[in-house]
Image (cartoon, rainbow, N blue to C red; front, side, top):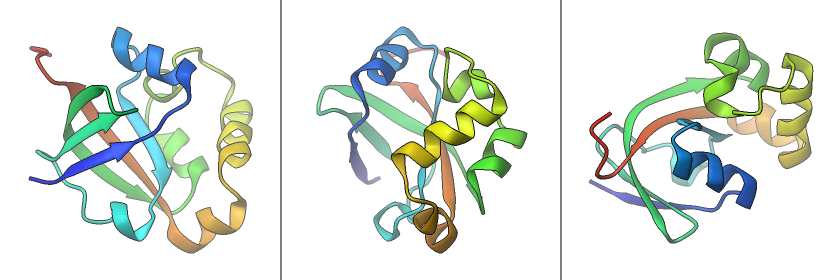
Length: 112
């Protein structure tokens, strides 16, 4: 089991704590490529979770077509707004170069 420390924006951390956000989507950087179910996540050095599933995609659009937007962005933006959010966080060249990873997780200590 590996431990991954992930930083998220404060608004998303609140959604993680409340249980509304259950999928973390990132550019699939080399350091994240080995992530697998059973690994541990620590969000912002304070919120522990366990990886339940990992899926790889070519683009953010593909992720948003196949995964529930509500589990990624609990405020439920439109499809296009969600794509723009991702492109505001990551330059398009990184998405094209590395691909995208969707990490499903549950908070440690939860029975869900």
